[in-house]
Image (cartoon, rainbow, N blue to C red; front, top):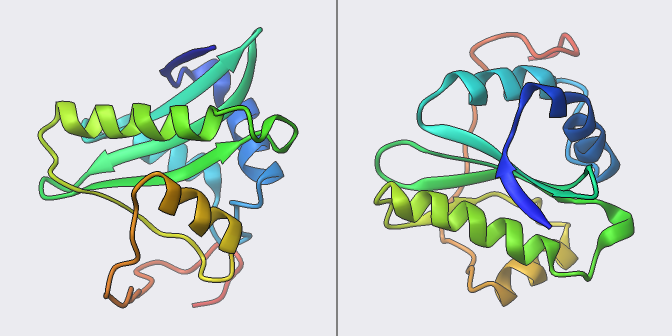
Length: 143
């Protein structure tokens, strides 16, 4: 198992992984998210590779105050092998190396197995409400 930084040759495999894990949405092009992450010095995409295959990922970044993880994914056929824990620990190490005191992530409230996974990693629900406002029209044409 090798955890390493994303390379452009990984893009198709990473997007396919995210789709297989149900992380993509019609209004949010994952290729655009990859492009933004790759361009920023405050973010990185980490991938886990086994025998030449991408089997896990985490997009990690920070806003100068706290760290965030996005697109944490493990190949559905490789669950319960410790890959999720390993990629989360790698993302946390990336944030720690940049002096981020806190790691944050968002999970859909209906995704109880994933919430349980993060609880086992020491994460707790925050007493916050996430608000959003689209500054551009969504890819599906809605606002």
